[in-house]
Amino acid sequence: MPCPLLHRRNEVIQVVITPAAGKRLIAKAITNHLAIQTALRSGTIVVVAGTTNGYVAEELLSLCGNADGFSRQRFFRGITLPPCEKTTDTGRLPDESQFPGDVVIQKGTWLKGMTLFDVLDSLREGDVILKGANAVDLVRKQAGILIGHPKGGTITAALQAVVGRRVRLILPVGLEKRVSTDLNSIAARLNAPDAVGARMLPVPGEVVTELEACTILTGARAELVAAGGVCGAEGAVWLAISGTVEEEASARAVLADLSGEPAFALE
Image 1 (cartoon, rainbow, N blue to C red):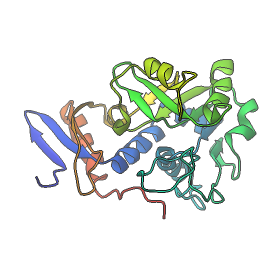
Image 2 (cartoon, rainbow, N blue to C red):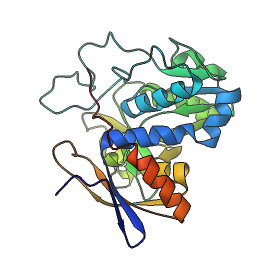
Image 3 (cartoon, rainbow, N blue to C red):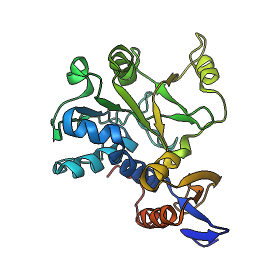
C-alpha cells in the first residue's frame, strides 16, 4: 500500500499519523489549550520530562520565545526501547548524565535548571502540570503511569499539588499506548505483592491524545478506525476526521504539516 496522508471519502477525512507525528500534533494542541494559555500569562507550567512532553516543551518554549538551549534528547527519566537495547531495570539508559531536568515556565519565562520538585510546594490553583503516560483507556478517558521508583516517582509528587491544591494535571499520551482493559484492573495485577517489574498508577487528569488534539486545534471530531504499518509507520494510527467545511479545511492544513515529522531519536 502506498503511504497515504489524506483521503476524502463520504465527507470524512482519513489520515495516517505516525507516533512521532502524533506527539507533534498533541504538542501543538497543548499550546492552544485554554488552561495553558492562561497559565503562560499569569501562572506556572511544569512540563515533566518524557518523550511526548519533549515535543510539548518545544512548542511551549517556542511560543514563549525561549526555545534556545532546549533539546528533546534525554528529556526523560525512563524510556521504552526494543528488548535488544541495553537499559537499566527501570527503563533508563545507562548514561543518565545528560538528563536536563524538567521544563518549568513561570509567566512565560523558562526557569532553566528547575524541576518539578523545585517548585512543587509553590504550585497553586491555576497552575498546570503536564505529565506523560504509559497507558490510556480511550473508553474511560483515563491514563495510567508505570512506576519504577520505590516512592512513586514524579507522578506521586505531582498528585500532592493536584489533589491537595487543585493544580490542573494534563496527560499528553499517544494512541499507540491504548489498552483495552480497565486500568484499575491492570494496576491491581501489576501492584500485587507477588508481582515483579513495574507497577501501575491510574491517575486523575485530562487526557489529551491525537483525538482530543484534533478537536482542540480544528474543532473537528476524530475517531480511531485502524492502526499499524511498516517501514517507519509501526505504531501508526488511522483517524477518520469529520466536521464542518471550515473545520475539515483546518484539519487538512494541520495534518499536512505533520507529514514530514521524523521519528524520535536519541541522537
